[in-house]
Image (tube, rainbow, N blue to C red):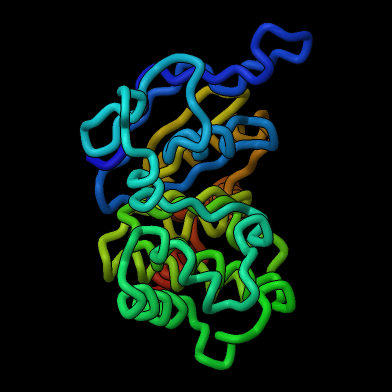
Length: 284
């Protein structure tokens, strides 16, 4: 088991006039090798939650376990935790600060105390995994496009060989091609390395396509935790929270209302295509 949270509570500005209960008694388990989607409206607690998972924020109360050890125990090694649980922020410029791309990606493994040869080997491998070749190495990260900056930020985390990769809106602001390229690369990491992935996204289509399980946050509480097909059955409740289901879900329900006996568990375009073709073959 990679990560476990027990009765997690977090209060911003505790004891002040601006006190806000951002997390309320959150309990969850994320197992090794899972690909988990985390969704919720703005202010639902998503970003606050993920910053607890590698110790960037400390809970007001409750506990977080990583591989069975409570990270709030005295003298816990947070530096080692952040090497194993990598977090890529929504705005990659918050993580980029070196003079060139290669130096930026070397920063993490260098601070792990590795040799120069090992640091550079990891940086090259990580940049290759995110689709950036040697032509990018000496470029300033601040001269790159939004998608390229995200790739560099992801490479900087991957170079530390994390066991868990947390991505906060990694495709925000990207065109469809850039979005698909980054998410396909993340999916390959999950499959080829059995890496645990936690993906925060507002795109229900992306969540439906890639993840095995969805956590839904609402006003600081975890309200759903299930497979995508089960969560999206509650699309009316999701709408009441300011969310939605994938667009194909609404199309499927409209077809069913008009007498088309298509499977109501469909959540992706590919599944809808296959379902419609089956009905046509069966003469229905």
